[in-house]
Image (tube, rainbow, N blue to C red):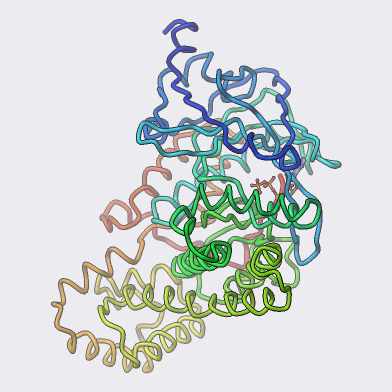
Amino acid sequence: MTEEKAMLETGWNFDNSYARLPQVFFTSFTPDAVRSPGLIILNTPLATELGLNADALQSKYGVAELAGNKIPEGAAPLAQAYAGHQFGNFNMLGDGRALLLGEQITPDGERFDIQFKGSGRTPYSRGGDGRAGLGQMLREYIISEAMHALDIPTTRSLAVVTTGESVLRETELQGAILTRVAASHIRVGTFQYAANFGSIEEVRELADYTIKRHYPEVDADDNRYLSFLREVIKRQASLIAKWQLVGFIHGVMNTDNMTISGETIDYGPCAFMDNYDPATVFSSIDRQGRYAYGNQPYIGGWNLARFAETLLPLLHDDQNEAIKIATEAIGEFNKFYHENWYAGMREKLGIFNAEEANEKLIEDLLNMMQKHSADYTNTFRSLTLDKLEDTALFNSEEFKMWNELWQARLSRQQESKEDSQQLMRNSNPAIIPRNHRVEEALEAAVERGDYSVMEKLLEVLSKPFAHTQEQTDFCTVPTEPNESYRTYCGT
Ligand SMILES: Nc1ncnc2c1ncn2[C@@H]1O[C@H](COP(=O)(O)OP(=O)(O)OP(=O)(O)O)[C@@H](O)[C@H]1O
């Protein structure tokens, strides 16, 4: 394909609504060209869904676009302003190493942010270099795509390119840029920025914009801002329940890492839990365990309370009334979360209908898993495949008793055993991106330039509920689960 043809055919179709918001919300900014862009990976199915031409994107011209060296027609690159509570402390932040290239309108008429991560310094970079290392960007690619396959709302990854420049961290790394795709990048922190550094009118403009973009169903409601708050709470309750159900630990649930759309964002120090333990923390900087697995629902509620605070002036003219309304709405988070989590757990055990005794059944199983350091994913997989002897719990008396109660519970429902098993197969992934597998793939890619390990891993991760024999290799647990693994932010 000639360069001119590729240029015509990459397929970008931008309409940049965020750039029409008041200037305080962003800074228009063209990225610096990088030395020598090289394509590492392109997500061809996602490119097609977005209406992009994968062949053209892989051409020299397309790769230059994915590195920010050529700005496609219709793009309006900008860095977004936001603030946020990081480990509980409020800071002014903003896209310090990211740029919104534009909003792609797909052939189906959907709108997605196309964002570069690692594309260089911006006016919000503070002391940072604006860059990212190849390993960390590939890690985000692998885990975000795995989350998508697990049916968990998430930003997605379109491509990773190397820059031909090095990035200095503890060691010298290969610089890379990730092209991230999101329903939007509006965060709780974007509202905190508006509320702390802007006017009430600007908060209202941001809220109106976000309602139109993500919650059009509440647009005509009497108290639309309250409906908006409640819907955001519901989506986050559903999202965090999904994380808990697959053992995902986000690792850095700062308010700038919580989206208003309800998608998972920022795969910094995240990881999946091996043996079940609510205290599991992977992030090396989270010394207090603020973002431990078992604490995620609580932090979700805390972050949403910060979001509700930003909306107070819009909720009621009388601020005492506004606080009352917001507190009531936030008070519902736990209920929504629990409903979602509980329904998901029932499905993981093949139970179709709610019944009081289920709660205890679930609780007892989790307690046994914790006591025996049983692998979370594999325990549910063994129950699903009826291979109870594979669980670390098998020989214990308490598990035998639990199993009898569970079987009795299953036989009391109208649905057949086969239906139950099918429900469990659809609810319990065999495959999650286990840390040792991700590390192995990254090491081969980054240290040896061998991308075959990552490609195989991505293929297996794309079908987590298939339960095929050939996946079995990817179900093994590491020799030292959980404890041995630590990740770092911002590399
Ligand atoms: N190398 C860097 N240079 C400049 N700013 C940075 C750098 N790394 C992180 N930041 C900024 O620090 C803040 C917090 O970083 P965090 O790791 O949560 O975000 P991120 O991973 O860069 O981005 P995102 O949340 O968009 O995925 C953000 O404002 C981010 O832009």
